[in-house]
Length: 490
Image (cartoon, rainbow, N blue to C red):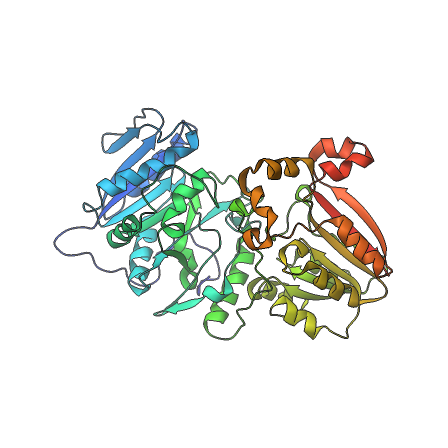
């Protein structure tokens, strides 16, 4: 984070916030979405935090049913559409109607503990930003042992190394997951969002589900970008009071601190800002994107230490993410070289004893020419590269005599997916072209045939799909299992 080593959620923000105009206090309109009654105790705690602020704050609760939250809280009842998840969209019309009446506009879910220090930090950093940048926040959660977690950092979500910029004395960067269940806008930013035509719209979903879409439209549809002040990240972390995902989803605080140190080094010009490939697809909600963070076994985790072939003393990991699997191999005495997904996660792997080569995929493979490895690992990678067969051939060329190639990826030949493609449902219709989707529907049968041409012995395993896929006859598994794994040996 910043100069403080320990995370202190109660600490005051760094530096003095701008003084409010002497003639009046700044006015802030807060819209909080609250569906049902499960979070009512948390909502009352959240409202108390707003009441304690030095600003003049009006709180409006958007609800599916009447709620008694005190005389100073306005409750607006009604869903924008029949879908219960559409409730957050109700803040849009409210903000449009009140656009000239307030200085600040905040949207929040009902379990986000927003404090005075968060608003002060926003007011301090906003004058330093470019016109199309909005100071954004991240959530944190606390597990039963007191560990702190950042739930937004999961799956394919990551810091964008090339986005790191200096803004005055501060450093900002973009995180690929814009959702944080809260946003704050100045009046000028709200005007710009409304004028763009992307703010005041009917409930919809796209890259995110409907709940998250309502909270991210200012960044994704209005010509502006969310940037996070990483040089004072403590001031931009908001407690997600439900602690719903703590310890189960997201990045631990120590891991986040390591990545922030790397971002600050990029800002100082002391670390590269490269990435391996465009791991994101154009498919909504990130389907088939490359994961930066180790997934649980049910999701098709990266190869565990015991999955390495016996006797392997050197391993090349292509598309290394958070480095957990690679660190486990290093702990077993294996020499591990990695081509990381980007220079931020690569620094974490390097700190764990992994030899890291930064840069684009083609550059990294070229630098490895002439070297040989007992095992080459490429998980969830080939379907994302422009020429998967060429990359496969380069992987084979890096194998030592008797070496093993471990491949894993999503299966695009399941009955369910074929039905979606045939009916043109959802984003599956984009799979007809790599240019449209960013995805090659390369399958294990094609890969197995290519590997056998290289005189490799190939074993294919199907995985995932729940109990039905596990218990179905062997001949039916290729039609049921959403994932595959190939082991090819020289």
